[in-house]
Image (cartoon, rainbow, N blue to C red; front, side):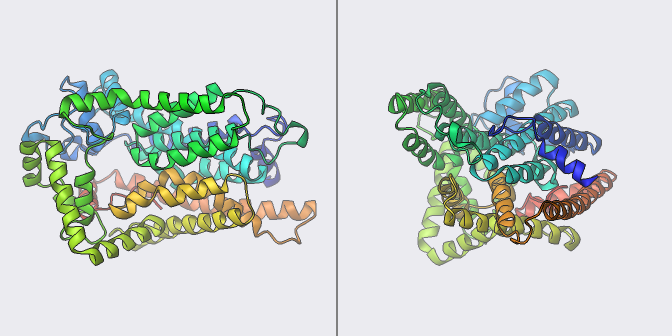
Length: 504
């Protein structure tokens, strides 16, 4: 039975030899599991506590403002204290998506939540296709099979898609896709026959460069932090495609297309605030909440305009631009005056980013979550080190991702969701690490089948354990709204909103 299951998962014959694209059965299985869980566990029923603030948080508030004709404004939870005016607190991609759904299916309705989570499920399932192709191109078909199906089936990989009305699933899909495009443009494929290597090296790549730029433009308008990696990625692609016709011209064209994606948003911000705002305007506030007086490595949510009435009123009186600048100046002054305090918090945040953000959840929930979170980090980083040592194509590019992109989180604050765009790569690298550790004695076909069967049984056991715990928490949690309210308060006050039904 397991051998037939493994044969079906490998999808031999579904693609031509050397074709790196994933089989569509991978998408459909991942999609079906996510939508079924989201629907049967009723995760689309967002509790209305705090005037539906958990329905998209600041993005949901802005979307409501857009859908009701008040413009891109009013991002905070304390809406009963009155409107706060225009904002650039959150980049526009996800708020605009929520606003469109609100227009079609109602503001803060369960149907709107179901549609948004359905979109998340589609994007998360498509990410599995990208995981397969990256693993196939850089490593092997065996790595692609394991990595793709792990992303499709493992609950921790789908937690944000089925519960969170935020941009993580969109950003992760876009980032994974842009890496796939970069590998295609460099023509990297470890599993292609020698006769076809470089077969398309004489072709211009104008269309690919434009797609590359459009994806980066949407990423910038979704999560601007990832832009730290854009120069490295663009230069890496340009170096690898320099011999193609019009390579430099295409790169310049891509830069123009990327800037064109950002221009409408920047023009709007300049007209509204009479100042240049680099995509989002809340960096000063976030820096203070992570590094100001009283900070201890966690974000001080109790001092956020979402929760602190005095800060909300101050924001309302000063306006977003002046308020963010004021708090940013205070944060930088405190950091300069207390460098050892800032260093200690930074070291804590590095630990939180890779090992896990602690919460006050019961030990039976917290321990498996932390073990799962830290295990994939450790295995992925070791897999990256092994990839660099073995000169795996694309390993250097991945290393730059892990060096550059966590830097803002190290210096501001960390939540578990910030690592989600990295997790497809961590999955691939972890699989590579364990495949590289395979004893050389497993050389015969029967040994390989036995080894695969053992791995499948282990994965099935771990998946069943994860699903059973997730379903138990999900369905037991729906019976008590009071318990949910206490949990929400505890998450907010601890500064860790990572304890969700599948976050282990």
